Image (cartoon, rainbow, N blue to C red; front, side):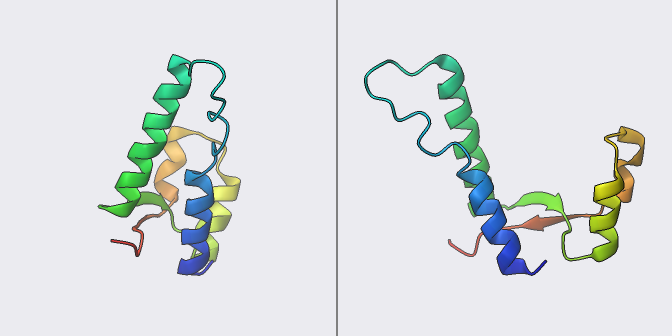
Length: 88
């Protein structure tokens, strides 16, 4: 996966809850507030220091990620990389 494709995927992920909390006819729940703050924090990290994600440019790493069953003992087989937005 190319760097631009990874950045598009991250942007889609960071906008995953877009529009869900925009109902103005009722108060926003605490869980919605917390979720919105969490998404905003993720976005700020992406803009500034970057976020760490699995390296999707490596075919071997993508294969390791697909085969990973969630076992914490095997997480070391997945190579991570830091991606930062090109917007400053």
